[in-house]
Amino acid sequence: MARDDIERQVQEAARSFDAELHTRAFVETHSDAAQLAWMLSFLRPAPNQVILDLGTGNGYVASAVARQEPDCRVVGVDVAAQAIERNREQAREEGRSNVEFLIYDGIRLPFPDDHFDAAVSRYVFHHLPRLEISLEELARTVREKGTLVLADAIRHEGDDVDFINRFQLLKRDGHIRMHQRADFIDVVCRHGFRLVETFDSSISFTRERGADYDALIAKTPDSVLSAYAMRIDEQKMAVTFPILSAVFENLNSGP
Image (tube, rainbow, N blue to C red):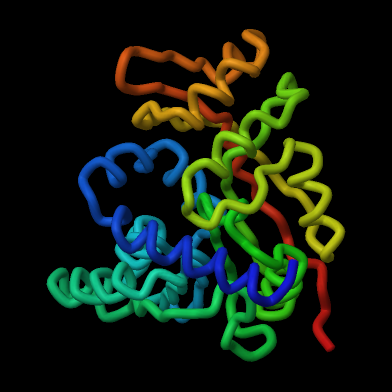
């Protein structure tokens, strides 16, 4: 991907999520208590640990980690500057001094090698414009044997027309690519991580109908639409995406 395309994707993501991340609708749609509890059970924050939340968004995971272990330090990074500032305000309002929120460029992590004891990234994988570099950066900044917890929507095994990616690209929010389950796991493991455990869930949301969406749906096989539980009325459509949450161990031993 060319540099100009990367910058455009990052800017699109920042604009979209600055507008959405702290809205009631976004919070309600993207909250998942069971998934969060599962993530925390593997992150296991302990006193004096430093934990990264990559693509922290509205701070959903970072704040939960900070609340669970007041003596650890949590760093949430994101490209959405306004959302980051709102996260900082909320942390101050709640008196949480063990969590900080930083803006980053969406590619390189501004931290030294082996800086984190663990890292988590939720619903960000498909937005990363240079996925290979992002995984290299996670491998570099998380210590050897450290934990990486990733969660993202994945392409349904029955989606043989790549509907999920065509659908997501119609919303200008910096979407790059959603992977099928095996590809998701493989690309992470190819960067020196070992799969430990997985957790399956789903996310459902609605979007306003429009000509582009209607055209895509019209040419998509019913079997694929059914796989995503697509429901359509006169004004809106509802869709459900499968979510893969996965825990990995970092096998990289550093430079």
